Length: 376
Image 1 (cartoon, rainbow, N blue to C red):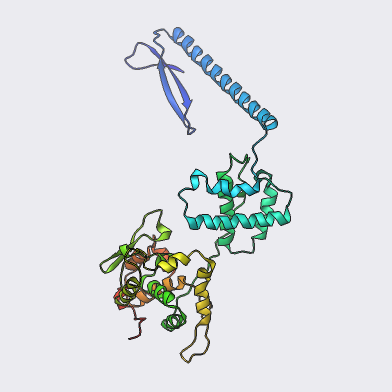
Image 2 (image 1 turned 90 degrees about the horizontal axis):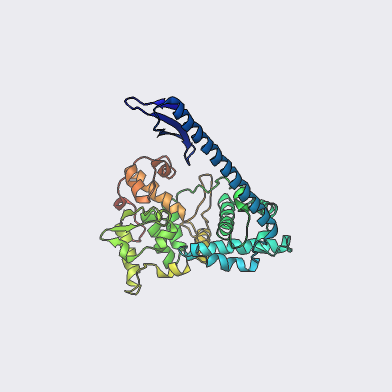
């Protein structure tokens, strides 16, 4: 359209252009014409140019799509044998920052999938030959697993496909076509003081120290194992938990006097140049034996009379090292500690998450009032 601006002798042509985000933006162009008839001629030229631009765009799109179709049929896409997949993936530039533990976990997932392929679809030799149907059948074999296991397998395979999309000539990431399993993670219960003492009695020296660290700090197993001397600042431990590593969220935990004795004892047994307080645990952490060791300890527990009394899941929830984290929160709440204090110590981003650990108690006070696990 054309219009005359106030205080201007010239006609102005107005038009709209579509921005990348889909919005229409108004643009104005002075025709430099004083007569309306001349301005209308300019408007016609602008419309003709716009139509020509649209036509050129349509032609360009047609040519690109035609070229893609011809290329798809005539050019052979690169292939990648299954035997070369892991080496290509693990040495890819995008994987340099991945931890050894993460890569080890994904390698197990990949090898398990390859073993299944070799049994069910032995004719498949290249990564590009694995179809949506094959992926769907494999995921069905995992449907009886825990949601965390199912999602870990699906996401690990999806990461491999995404990384090797170009080099392996993949048309799509088939694993992204399937939704993940709904969360069915275990709700852990807390331990009673009697149960913790039974656990300590059934543990080795190393596990006694780790259990005490979990009880007095509320840290997860991986964080207890990887406590460093350099993280001890006077009466406090300052660290960034593994789970909040990306957000660099630090927690500061007061060291209970009995935990201090345990840590000092452990430090005295390690070389001065060694920063880890539990170097043996760090070395064993990724092994299957270490991961199952705590469950075995729970099975060996005895009651006060010395009779076997394994500590197992019940109606309140499951049991594991994570139960010590629940115990830490519950114990401090019973002592009258403030909810915000607990939230800061355990590193929860929301009070709602901490409420999962409350077990219907209130408030919370101070770690120094927690009961002793040491024999007086």
